[in-house]
Length: 515
Image: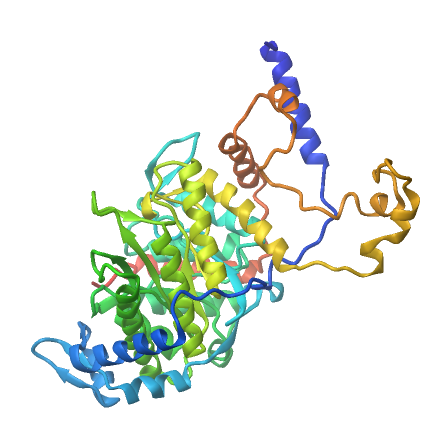
């Protein structure tokens, strides 16, 4: 066994080699298009029937809508509203009119031009996990999410080009709720230049966030309305309920022409029918109701169709992810999204309690369900554990490795004269090797994907380096990223103005979330 001092020297040499090995390879991870053939789980007739059943559900069974302003908008659009029961009955003509004005393609604007991307069917965008109450890593263990965690996760999301959207990976619970949105917005703007996320937690907080966005990005009202510069995620309360903050979020974001990603979260056998077809039909109906509200508030407002449907473990009642039913539900949602022609969101994720083989298996099966279903946005693509209760630093890194490989596949490949390489074939005699051919020497440091955390060393070399597993190696990766603290260029005057706004609004008491 190597002495500790010698082992330390070996580790330092390994790190020095890694630091010195800067890849010359260039692959565009920022504007991806899904290259995979799309799969279907149901026939076209069955999808048509599911859509018709969803319309019937909205007409005959209705949606419970808890926000009076939303009920008023539905009523003005022609819906029948029962004020006593808060039930809204939405006609299919209203839905058809909403689908006609909802844009099929739009540009999402980042903080820098190279961070812009198009949202439409066929595009492919990744967002890491979102909304977890806990964070975990091998150094500090599992804990309630903090402001430090939020900032560090923002740094990690900024670092990996394969994430085009910033997400609230954890709730910073050490920040008071009336000023939390100032903290999360400031972190996103100062640490990243990617497409930012704002929570829909009442109009006062949303208006604060919009004002900070315009202030920091230097956007006029017209520029703000021309394209979405931020997004929110709106979850319905299945079955068939739209609560106050979610309904208000749909209206607020629509009025300012910012992006709402509508996501019914349905679990088969719990808050949705136990079958894939039944659960997705319910989810589809709730989506249609929410999309209709955005278009009633402001025709042409950008909106994403969405679903997050899996099953529960019928022995414990706990959510399960990365299951065959989860995979099939994604395929069905993709069919319905294509039926409507709207860009759409799906999700991966894991129910595992740590970053182990179960976590990898579940996340990858869920991810491939999204890819083969043609999702435009894949949320919870990295880091999620415990069904969304925890985000893992190490898992975010190991999942990002897989997403990088998917992005490499999106880049495609070529088979021209240079790639086929007859000259290289000509250089090598039978039983020879290609290590030293002109083609190999010209491409050896650019041809193949270079892993972030995977180790391709043989057993002897791996053992000599300390026999470290993937999670342990991922710890080195995320710690190095956080320590490097590479931030985008920020206009100091605008940052000063943002700080002044936050200081002023904090002194005024902030903006408590509305329930």
